[in-house]
Structures are given as structure tokens and as C-alpha cells.
Length: 107
Length: 134
Length: 145
Image (cartoon, rainbow over all chains, first blue to last red; front, side, top):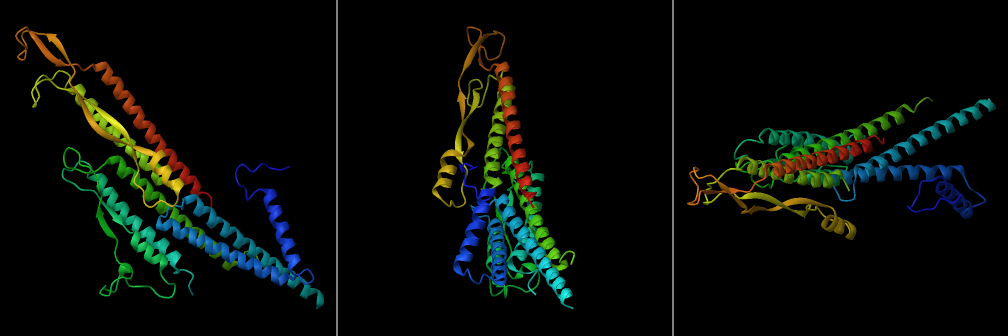
């Protein structure tokens, strides 16, 4: 079902699916033989950092009282950074747990 | 370790301080709504905030060479108390009740948003440090 | 785009209505005033409103320029209009009666002024409600996190 984009919708389910598909294609296309998990992790960390920086910039715009800054925009940016960071922490926890699991097998 | 005094956290803290001062001024404007000859005042701290938010994270800049050291405002200068431009009523009292109420509402809202943002940042840091359940 | 512009518009409206209230009170109080400092009876006063742009603090693009200067405007009292509208009342014993026994009184209809008073008060309430709604919207935005 195609949702008619009367307003640009970057967060709808179709858009997210499309974005994931495109990014996976891109990563596979660059180096389809050696798509390493560590590269994926590094990119994710860089992305989380970028979101944090964007949230900081949005806060600075709000404090300076610039034209484009509204409270809702800043809250959304901060919340996004928050959620991404929390997701990354959980991913790290799971990765560490998986590693421990594997180490437990070998001994 | 620059967790709590990078320019954003400092900016947010200073914003809360200044807004609290400004609330005092605006409340005194309201209290003097009937005083003849009273000129309403306001606090302008946009320059200070801009300086803080642009400052290098490594060191704090001094705005004027002769500034006395000591007190939080020393590095960035003090905010300026400005007279509001208003039209006089019958008794040379320039206080427009509705305007002051609007400024009070706006000021209090921005204070609350700074509080909210700081608490979200602190909560995130606490979450990351505790690592939550592993 | 923040709360402040809309709140300033509402505040300007409230100030204008407050001034109008003062004028209506003055009209009501002086409904029978026959002597003023300019000579002659009291002239009925009315406020003329015009739209007024909220002063900007740096526009970022053409749309916001247009928005603030042409569309989203507050209100200002342009001037106070004095209407020399009189009626003749027969009262030969009044100190200001003319030789025919008529007194020139201001033509202030008390009922009309009371209705204006109601309308002013309702406009004021409506603007207060607008500000309250704006505040609620901003507080909801704070709840995003």
C-alpha cells in the first residue's frame, strides 16, 4: 500500500524499510565479499555520535533564540539522540553477552 | 573529563540562572503595575549565552581584560539590564500588564525546557554508565 | 517558530481591548457631561484598531518574512476617535440650557455602550484562552522526552 506523501514522511514504516534496504544494498555493493560486522559497528557508532552532535546544535539554536528553533524541534532531536544511544548500549550489552556465551562454549 | 562542563551543559545551566534572575525582574514589573512613573526593566543575556555556546571547550574566554576574577559571571561578562520600550499610560507608568504576563509565561516555559533538557542528558549519562543490566 | 510570536499577538490584542474598555468606561461615566475643558459637551470616544506587525528578530527566509509582515499580525490602536454627536434635551432649569431651554447633551446610548463592554470582555477572554492554549501546546512539546 503506497501512502500518498502529501507531507514528506521520512519516518513512516515504508520509508524506514526503504532506507534500510538502500543502505544494505549500498554496503553490500561496496564490498560484497567482505561485509564485516566491525565495519557495521563502526558506522553505527559514528551515526550515534552524529545524532548527539545534531542534538547539541539544536539545543544551542534554542538557547540562542534563533528563528528556526522551536521547543518541539529541540525535544525531538534530543529524544532521538537519547533513543539511539540507549539502543547502542543494548546492542553492546548483547554483543558482550554473545561473546561470553561463545567463550563459555570453548572452555 | 569533560562530561559536565562542555559548552552545552554550561550554556543550559547559565540559561537557567539568567532566566531565574529575569523572572525576578518581570515579577517586580508586575508588582509595580500601578506605581506612577515606573519604567519596566528587562534582562538581556543573549550576548552572554552566545559567547558561552561558541566558546572553545578547552578554555573559557574573558570578554574584557579588566574583569575581576571570582563569581560565575566573571568569564563571560554580566547580563545587561535594559529598559523596555513601552508606551506610557495616564500616570507615566509604562507597564503593560498583558505584555508582562506574556514575557513571564515565555520565560517560565524556556526555563522549564532547559530543566527538561538537562535532566534528559543526565538521565542518559546515568543509563550509559550503569550499562543497565549486564 | 516559537510560542512567543503568537503570544505577542494575543498580548497586543489584550492591550487594545483594555484600552477600549477604558474608553467605554469614560463614555458611560460622562454620558451627562455638558461642560468639558475644550468647551461644549463631552464627545463620545471610540478606538480605531489597525493590524500591526509584530517586530521581528531576524527573519531567516522569504516565507517567514511574508508570514510576519503580511499575515500574522497583532493589533494596535491607531487613534482615538472623538465623535461630536449631540442631542438636544429640553431642560430649561439646567445651568447650561440655551435661550430656548434646550441643553446640548452627548448622544451616548447607555445600552449600546453596555453591549460594547460585553463584546470587549469576550474578546479579552478569547485572547486569554488563545494564550492558555499556546502554553498547553508548548508544555505538550516538553513531554516528548
